[in-house]
Image (cartoon, rainbow, N blue to C red; front, top):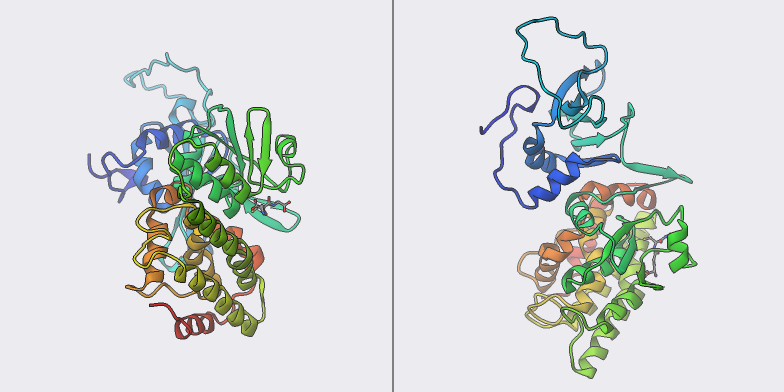
Length: 392
Ligand SMILES: N[C@@H](CCC(=O)N[C@@H](CS)C(=O)NCC(=O)O)C(=O)O
């Protein structure tokens, strides 16, 4: 079957998409609400269609979208549905599961073309009328569950392990450590925590209650750069720092440059509300990146050459947030094709371990809305960066 009837009309069956087993597991055993991007829905939902049946559709006069509701078929007859008295109706045997055991419901929000909005699909066990996966707390809104590829990786590393990474899906400092663990292929457990609620398990490792925090048996530590060094010192899997002492110092120096100049400047660009100051801050951020690349391998694409290593990992979470956050909120321009800058940004964005720890774009867009607030005259930032570029 290559296309689908009814409410799945228009969806194409993509045979053997990557990580299908994991996605089947995620979608079948859903116990908290998850939100899928349109792309993930299109790719994976047809593969679990045998479980769900369409229940109802709600259309609105003044809203440019419709909501389609689905129930898990393993639930049995939807409440309010009269029992069929058709003697010819085939009696279905319920052997494997009892009635009303499964309470998973799905709401599919279909946006009409004029809406111009992001399409998403929410799946939950206990569906609320207006649901999304963002938590509101003290005026802050943030996601509490990874999405996209990061969600798949989180599920793959949910099992108990001696090495535990306490992380939050939106946090770039966590992503550093997560990328390093993936690159090294050290067995680990990923534990999603809310650092604004600070569960005791996090405070036990980091009394300040910040993520990332790492627990290794009965010992724990925190601060992303320190954790990157700890993983390096374990000497397990692939080394991210070179052997030579002088080259190691060189890498540490530029990792320090990232912490002192790139990270704070990234937030200055985002937090500043005055358009003129935004332009100044954006130039400073670009200068900090330029300095880093001036010290990098001339051909790259990575800092030390053809392989991604320590310095790239230190910067990667902010590099991938340029296109996902600074472009929509501040008009940060795409890297000019053919430049050393473009080859570095593209190589980081395409790296499998970076991808494995990256959520879908909307998660980042939502997570930084509270910093960015106003949308300025974004073309000013783009012009300033493009005209001031000193890179080859
Ligand atoms: N310097 C720390 C920064 C960690 C950090 O700021 N984490 C944020 C999330 S991205 C956090 O835990 N915030 C909780 C809070 O501020 O209470 C590191 O490199 O690990």
